[in-house]
Image (cartoon, rainbow, N blue to C red):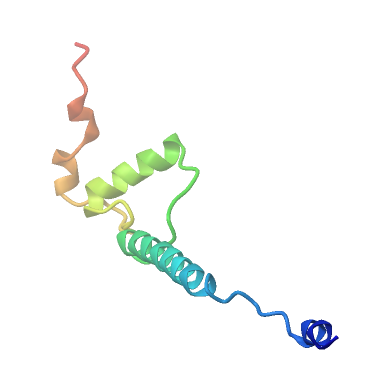
Length: 97
């Protein structure tokens, strides 16, 4: 009877051995995700990553790149800089005439 009583009074021991490796895996995964997000924001001058980019957005990104040297920066001046006349995308296309 003592053995039955001791079996009933023992507490369920939670297996804590897998918790430490799972915590390491979770921390590495979260750290990697945070690093990727940080690099993407650093590349985009602190803005979130672009998504759902269509043809118009790509053309505007190319224009911004030719005007400012970076696809994420824009210029609000009325006239384009002098370098913009020599840096046209039309020069890359073959002549029709």
